[in-house]
Image (cartoon, rainbow, N blue to C red; front, side, top):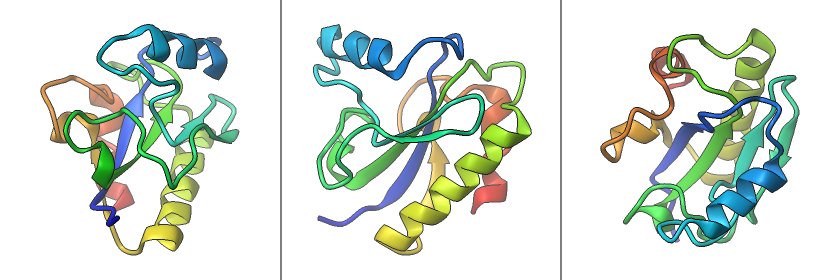
Length: 130
């Protein structure tokens, strides 16, 4: 299967929420149904997690899950950007995904559906990843 894009999300939660808690929320959400809905996750301290098998379809962009790789950045970035260490980890995660899938574009969740995700402050930083 081809990969058309890397889609960046924010969790819109406290950075103290665990990936296990996020996965449970996703499993309980009838629109997602699997947990976690992302392939990769990035903690506030820059730790990169593989959350879902990159060869499997996750539930992160409705009607496009079979064509995207999704990276979640833990926190709420509506008004405040991620800490530099977390954004640098996102940059490394994007480079890693491009090693796996080739030169795919990076976009925010809002580029693919009606949502404010990944928050205005993080969204404004995404062009520097392309």
